Length: 485
Image 1 (cartoon, rainbow, N blue to C red):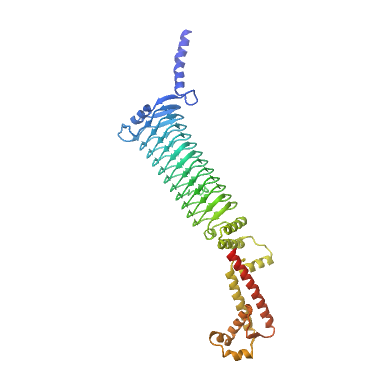
Image 2: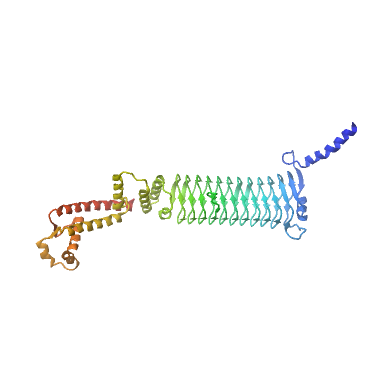
């Protein structure tokens, strides 16, 4: 019996010790590991794999001499679900094997400046309590930062992501990704930027997903290029769907090469898209702009969707959007009011004209005829030049009728005085067709003429005089509306 008990003790004692050693954050306390141990393994080319440990000391590889006399880590580095009590300095280091810091807490600054990750690098659920410095780094494999927390600055300026970079649901206090290059998908869906989000001059060479992202402070996307995906099965591969911008959002001089969407997004302060280029469809349906939304000198080459959008002041030229804007009655009426608020009467009139052209017409013959008259006579009240052209046409028409019917007669006094008139006006009286046009003109404008109509043609002259007064009133009303709105 004693022998059996001794045997059981010998079997379970090593297992118990092994369980205590592998105990992570779920246990009472993680096992402490000196930083020198990790450094020694990496420098000698041995795998450094730890889970649920407490790394004590600085992981500073910048001054370490490697076995191969180059700054290349040939072994796997995995420190997961652990805590690192010390600074990390992997500057200029090349990682040939996969790297993982999933679920690890960095209590001090983590420096990966100019590092090269040849394989996948995972920082999912990692927490950076101080600066996370990845400037000029290269990720040749996938870069995973999903659910990561950056408590201080996240510095990714000039970083190159050759494959998918995933920052989904990450919490970033202050993010700088200026001049970064995303060779594949750049995913920031549900990410929260608690400080300034700086994406200045970034290149997204494939899909850029910012769906349901939150920008609590200023968001900068100036001079950024969004290429999008060429896969037609992925609609809106440049996606800011349901994004929230609580502070100023700047997309100045930004280029959107493929279709992009900001549908259901909220801009609580100024949104600046000035001098940007939308080379494909842009969707702003149901988007809310509470501050000024500037699209000054913006270039649109694809369809523009603004249905259901709300804006306080939309600063844009009508000529820049008229050929690409998808029609909606409520939208056009809102734009007309918007242009009036901006004091851009010409744009308001042009938008109103397009609205009258495109809005559904009544099916009856009479309503269609009335609509045609409005369009022809004054361009729906905003084209005074059209009234002038119609007036000239009416004068020529009535002059032609007087000419064809020989309906005019010159008085003896007119004939006696004709020799006293020289130049052009004498010529108009001597040539009968021009005499008809002359009489038609003076009749239309309400003037007196030395030529009188014959017989029933006096009624025709009365009709023309009446039309002249009507068109004069129409011209004044149209001109006033055009100038004063």
